[in-house]
Image (cartoon, rainbow, N blue to C red):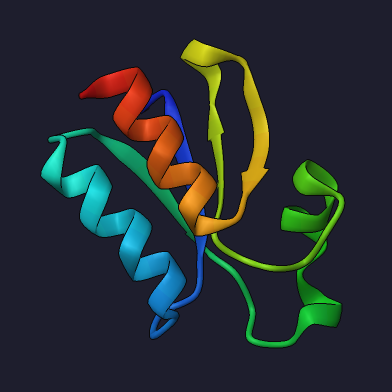
Length: 81
């Protein structure tokens, strides 16, 4: 199991931005596909207090539900580049 978990939705450009950065850095991660309906995104809401995606969890760095693609990309660059 990877240290990073990504909550994402296929076709989401913000999620794709994070996936591209994870791939660029050669990082292994677990992907959890969330439902299209925000009202059904209970799992992502439980870890991030909101229903938007992308959201990552990074156990190695103590990240328990970071959202916003720009923030995630910046974190990944600073922590893994």
